[in-house]
Amino acid sequence: MRWLFALSLFATPLAAQDQDGNDRPSNWRVTHHAIHDIWNTICDERDENGALAQRCYIRRVDVFSPQPNFAAQFFFLTPNEGLNSEIEFGLELGTLTAPGNFRIERKGTSVWHTNRVGCLTGTGCTFNGAAAETLLTEMRAGGDFRFTFRARHGASQDLTWPLEGFEPAYADYRAQLAKRGLTSP
Image 1 (cartoon, rainbow, N blue to C red):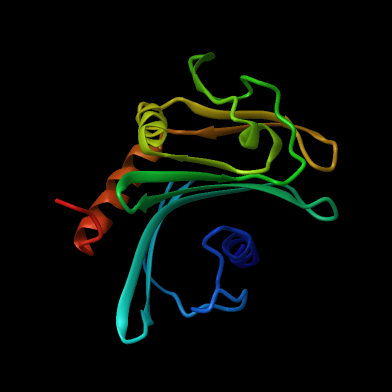
Image 2: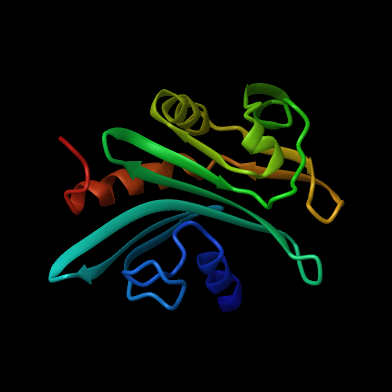
C-alpha cells in the first residue's frame, strides 16, 4: 500500500519537485493528512529561501489498471490565487471519453457533465473560476462522479467515485487552509 501512495504522489501535478522544478525527491513535509472515504485532505510545508511555504489540497488517485498496462486518474482541488478554487483532473494522454460520459450522477440521472475537449481526450482538464465553483457545488451535493471511457491502452473503463465523503473532506480542507492563514477572510 505504501508504494501506491508514493506512486500516486510522484505521478501528479503536485509531484515531488525540488525548488528549481527538477523531478526528484522533495523536501515537502506533510503536516496534515486525513482520509474521508476515497478523498484525501493533505497539507504540507517546506522552507523556501528562509520563508515557510505551505499548501493544502484534496486528492483522489484511482489506479484503475495495474502493470503491465498501468493507468490511473487523479483529482486535485487547490486554492487558486485570485480565484476561490482550481480543480484539476489528471488523465492519461490518449484517454477517449464520449461527450456526456465525464459526469456527476444522482440516482442514475446526470446532474453535471463536461464536454471540454481536454477532459475527453486526456490533454488537460482543469476548472477554475465560476466553472470550478459550479463543479464544487455539484460535488458537495453528493452522488457519484462517473467516468466512462476508453483508456490509452484501448481497454474500456467505467469508473465510479462516490461523493459521500467529499463534503467532510472539503470542510477539513477549508479548516486547514484557514488554520494556516491560506485563505482570505
